Image (cartoon, rainbow, N blue to C red; front, side):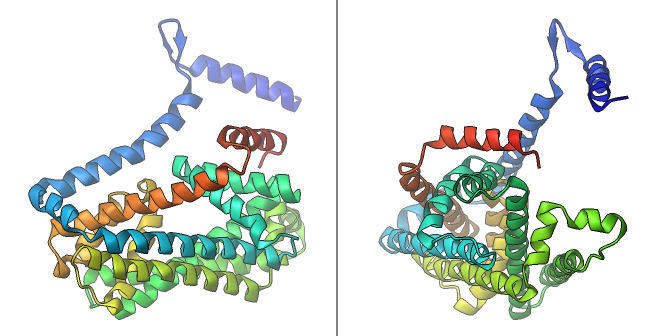
Length: 345
């Protein structure tokens, strides 16, 4: 039986198994992505409802009104630009290790536009990077996926490493101990994963697996280079600690830098978990837990919400700036769809 015949039979079976509502067919392929997109926002609503249930709403509004915006806003702008440049440098570092002829100024618009795409949808942001790599450097989607896997693994490891350091600095508690164990296990698994992919034998099914475009990338990058990329991701996330130091003071909370060095990486790790978009709700809950000795829940929540929304806004502004120099978001989305259709991952 040919592959085409098999697909036809599978389509017929799926059609028969699809429930009908009146004369309309319930399209599973359309419903599931919609549910997948809605559920995280339901989680955001549920978490914020819980957080706002017991706090003093008047004090929350007072905390917002008394925040020193003349300190916070300039700090946000400086932080946003430094973080953007470092983020771009991190991408430049990985492309440089693979000897791609890309200038730092070439990566700025790619990183900027994908900031905006990631606000719409995280996967769209990653797809945007793959699209730019294909368009500008003729890097295949599969190979680009391998590059982004290395980049994302280094990102995860940097957060785990900083969280481990943070847990060792932070006052001992049961939750800190659990986060420490979790981070050690995860960073060990990630490094083991990279080591295994680099050491696969050249025989049997392993040899076929090694020829996959996204796997070959792991063989081409020296382990020292991978560690260097992880280091640069640590530098990038360290800037968040400094911004928190300024930000909490704008909201009248004097949290020592040492404690922020301990807690901010853990908060960033929680934000990175695929629970809610941009860590909304989960990050605020973590801030209330860790900063409770330095302010009321209403004050901490006011800072937490301001932090999340302001970071999204500053990234959106950067994205819009570079979008004007690009083809427009619809053209980019069409390009991503066309590349995915031409070269299935």
